[in-house]
Length: 256
Image (cartoon, rainbow, N blue to C red; front, side):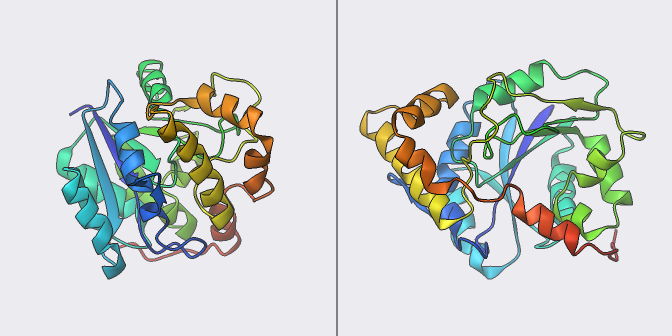
């Protein structure tokens, strides 16, 4: 296996409980994300990785219905969850996608894969050129394994690629930039009630016209014509969870 996509998902979000199971015009957020990732022409498998908490059982049942492999691992040590899931299949590359990205554009995933340098250990966006919610990170399994062995800060264990991104002297990092200019300020992620309201209206529009394969340019055009919808969730802090983790950071005991 060369390219394994791991979609991290759980039902225990504090800001928007059960957000990955929220309905968006007849399908859950998670189902849309899985379907959109599966439109990629280059990935070998898409797996959902969740935690051992009981409230994730409906999520696991959904994956079973969708014939999507699901892995259950640590709740807080998400880096361990990624490593243990990837270790089972031993891919050359692991692709990290989060389940709160229902407008995910599979074309950008394929572009990122095709244009990734062969000697790069990691590829991701360092500048905010993509809308919040079009996140893609690609890493060699060997780099994920090294991070898993060496990362000791709580923020590095929770946010998976922080150790990689902080150590360019150890890993070859390659920037990923959005092909469309000046859209990095847009918020397309599902993390707050206002996000859900905005995304529901986006999906309501495209599903009503029978266009489930809409892409980034379609969303931009729709929001341009409906600025009141785009305004619903503006002003929310980007990467709030990461910022909180860094403020409260500490060294943790890691069990191999």
